[in-house]
Length: 101
Image (cartoon, rainbow, N blue to C red; front, top):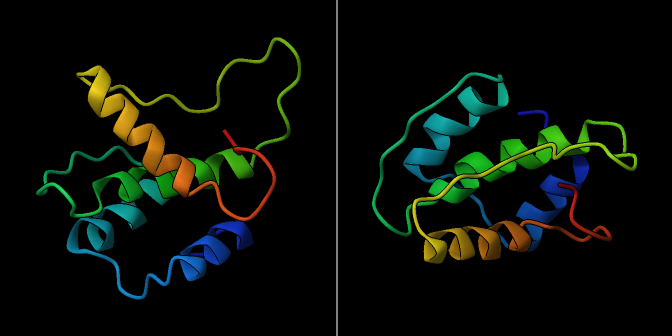
């Protein structure tokens, strides 16, 4: 999938070997820049399906300057889900310093 080396290192660090069905279907589409709509059960890896491409996009951008807007935006219907997504995305923050987005 030609992922950034930091993302690959993070995947290896977490010992993920095989993508879940939602990841196998969604990651290539999202990495190509196309929109997707995916439905899957809780715990199926949906957050990684969109956060890995999101982080890849962020890492491929020049650093933000003062006044630049966000590189990525995740909308969630509830505060609890937004907090859960934030925790999961921070886990994908990888071994590098800081959060790429």
